[in-house]
Image (cartoon, rainbow, N blue to C red; front, side, top):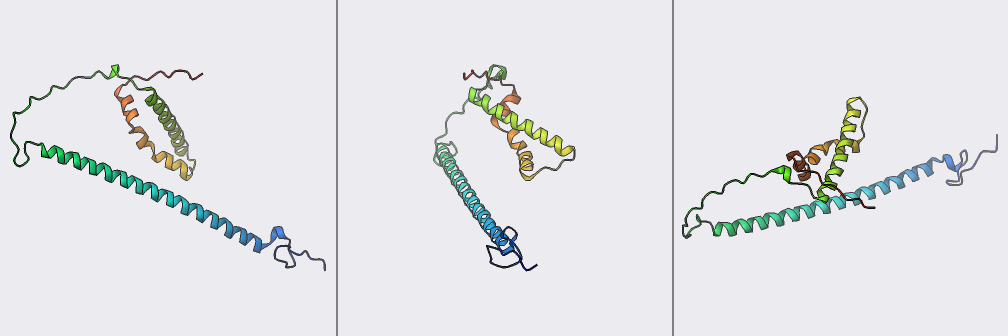
Length: 169
């Protein structure tokens, strides 16, 4: 009974390094510090992305306001404007959407979106069967409306023809 193991980490008697609570606590603190650093970096990237999006929105609003101002200046209702003869209304030209087709790039995007929608449908079936979904799977489910509202998907719903992709062999 007098030969008790000594920890090579904390130098205390009664346990080995693999079971040392001081070493485990230190490892836990180091792991939490790494996670906090990753979280801070992720938040910094997200803040930079949001700032860029705000700047882009500001630029687009400013350019829209400038074009609106130039349009308003040439408007017949602007102060001091000389009235001109009214234009004849343009007749709506009927468009046969069956004659329109997707470009190869749009076809690739449509295939990617359709694949994601199939994956979402499978996740919904799993959820409806009573299986629990993790956070990322739930986020994927929430993206369904955005995917269905993409321009290429609206074109498909309108009846655009599918493009035939050339083989890349």
